[in-house]
Length: 319
Image (cartoon, rainbow, N blue to C red):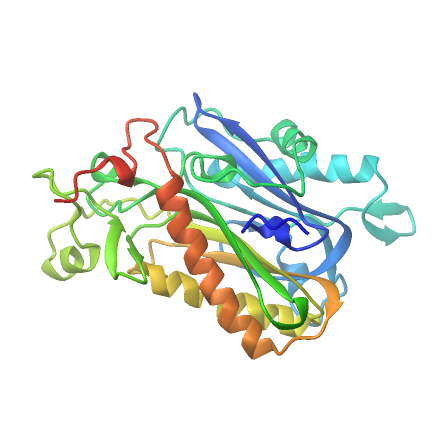
């Protein structure tokens, strides 16, 4: 079996991107057409009430991650059309209804704010979906992502999309795909070094968002529209409550890599997908989920490129 160190290492997962590098708008679809157990919720989402334990619908056919702020939620309509045409969805008396939760990032402050992903872009992302390698960095929903915005967009660093996976005992796979559009800094956990954040006005590396917060030396009108959105997936069998727990624990990966995180300026969301019937301890899965989320976040930064006047971290002098 070929492994890609990506969320597509989980069987039955396909990933497709739609990217517009000129308008800097984008969306990513994670297809699981036959339906899988899912969990996850946060501001800037669609169809997430269905995912809570106790609600009727327990399976989804896709997850959409999109730019374009709330406008980008329209991309899910195109994904629904794609799935309906192929006979996938939740069975009802009037036919199958595809269940497609979605989460968005705010990226209207880069590129052309009038160009946003819609139904057509969501449909095109489905057509591009495959179970192979996944493009990272400024691809799909990561195209317009930025980080370190406490001093405003003029000192921000380019964010992006990253993915990672791990295979553990008994053939269990745990993987993540994350779009990094955070307000705070991104820290590489192994070295504890800041790899992205607000750029130093003197041109040397990054300033610390936490230190700027404590000093009060930051813009009072700093954008509150930031978020880290992602999906963790496994071939282990989970019930709805366990999937919710996995989504919750996976966010530890955000805490390990983004400082500060979960602020009032952020609206973070992580979905959890269960595909397959392998047995695994939920505590073990949660521990690994935090690791692959953290790795995916770091990859998103290292794979990003300069776009829309916002420089990539790898092009910034850190001396």
